[in-house]
Structure formats: structure tokens, C-alpha cells
Length: 379
Image 1 (cartoon, one colour):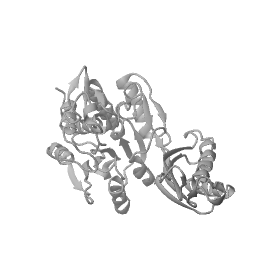
Image 2 (tube, rainbow, N blue to C red):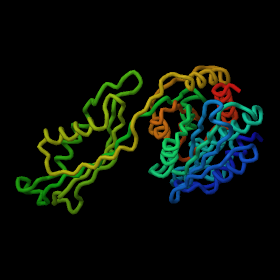
Image 3 (cartoon, helix red, strand yellow):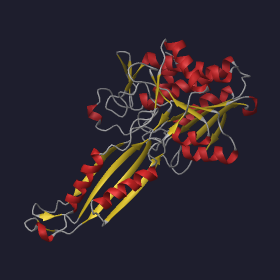
Image 4 (cartoon, rainbow, N blue to C red):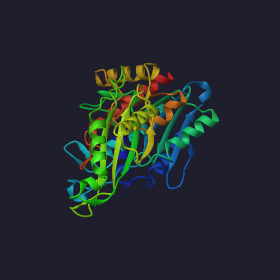
């Protein structure tokens, strides 16, 4: 059995539903410490954050590998064909919650780091692995905490490789070199409750919020740019009334999410939303606005070149570079001035019932990670 597979199974068998780590990080620390890795903990509340380092940052670049040990809930466990935390193998696939997102990637990183320090014990620069148990949750006590420490102490990594599952059809065919921003908004419109037979005597907020949603869901916010798709808006929740079939609601609430690129900064989007409300003569409302991620982009540089060359060398094809998908913890590292890119396992089963990863991909991903590290450090 390969070391990557064995480590992946060990991690998957720990039910580390966010924000719990269930000892995953301590196990990894115990695994890497004998190879000379220094361990630092940055825990906050119930969130576990660990940074493992090897080498001297004064002798060359710092390469940070970034991942998470928390997973999303399993949902209806009876719907799984294999127990979600059993890490069973069937027809060449390893099943389990977190296998693809992203304990398989974490295991590949750990073994790649071990292999590099074994082959190049006096390598230049510094190798780092940062893991959090707060990526699938609110992400307020995880990677962002360590990023603040990096900034305060001047410990800025030159490169950051995130192990999120980015691959689409085959391993390594897609690499994220940026991510869109994410804005969560809640709109509450107040009205006047009354009898449905006397519409002229009430102010029905359900009608107003429906008119608002009709506008914003049809609107073309921008055209995107060379690196980012057009901004999109999706409604995630809608609520109004329900007291009785002949009673109009007193308030209506909608929650929606915007995914934006740099051409539409969040402040501009909020101003446009408020202008639409004004144009629709909606005045009695509350708009809660939460920016969970700002967009970031890493132009072509040493990191992306190393990734392209490694994927081509190990896997035989060139990856597509894009900024698709949701958010990742790379959003906390990119503002430091670090080159950030993401490469990991296939993402078609993540967060789903019967999440899985191909066993063969685990060792291939480790080989790609090792080659990327070697190209960046030039030992």
C-alpha cells in the first residue's frame, strides 16, 4: 500500500466535521516531526491551526502548502453505499467524506514534503504546510488568523500552493490561479399585514421583493474581464408570510449571493443594489451586506510556470488556468503579495453522497506536488 493512500485513509477515518479536527493535525505533526519539521500551533476557540516548517527562509524562497482537515457533514448516511468514515476502496476508488475535499490532497502534500526533505535534506529556502479546521465553516478562526501573524511578523511566503480539488475530468487538467469574490446579502422589506381581499388597504412586501428579485436576477452586472467571468447573482433563500392563505405578510426576506470579479468591486455592487431599490420606490427595508471574500488573481510567474511544467512532465498535458469555482483559503494569503495557485484532485463528488477519489490519482498528485516543490526551491 502506498504511503499516500495509507495516510489518506487514516485521515478520512477521523470524522472531522467542521470545525472539529479529530486529531488529524496532531497525527500529521507526529508524522513529520521526525523529518525535522518545526511545529507551531495557532488555535483559536474550537478551531485547530497548525504550521509545519522545514528549512531556512533566509536561504531561499518560502513555499507554503495550504490545506484543511475539516469536512462538511455527511448528510443522510443511509444514502451512502460505503460508510462515510470507513475509507473503503471499491473498483479503484477510495470512498469517504473528505477524500477529495481535501484529505487526499493533504496526504499527497505531506508525503511530497517528506520525500523532498529526505532527498534534499539541505535544500535552500523554507518548506511550510499550513492546515486549518475552519475552511468549510465560517473561516473566521482559521487561515486568516495565521495570515495576520505572517503579516505582523514579516513572514511572507513567496509562493502558496493550495490543495483544493480543482481537477475537472482528469487529474491536473484545471488549475485555479485566482478566485471570484463572494458577497452574502440579506434584504428585508417591511409592509403591512392585511386581508388578501383588500389589497388596496395593505402594503404587500412579497410583491415588492418579487419585483426586486425579478430585476436583479435578470441584470447583466458586467462582462467580466480577461481573467474573470461576469459577476453573477443567485437567490439562496426567500421567505414571506405563511400565517394563513387570506393574510398578506408583514415582511418579506430574501438572501442572495454575488460572485464578483475586480471589474465590479463590492462597494459598487452595493450601491447598484441600493439604487435599484430606490428606483422601485422601496424605502422601508434593511440590507445586510457581508463580504466573505474579495477576488484575487495571480498572473503568470514562477509558481504557475512550475505547475504547468510539472503537470506536463508527470501527467503529459498542459492544465487550463482559470478563476472558476467557489472561494478558498487562498483568499487570505494572496493579499500578502504571495503568488497563489490551486491544484488538487477531481472535484465532481465533493460535498456529495459517496464522495470519492481515484486511488491511482493520490500517488500521481504527490508526484506532481514533489516536482513543483523541486522546481521552486531548485535544490
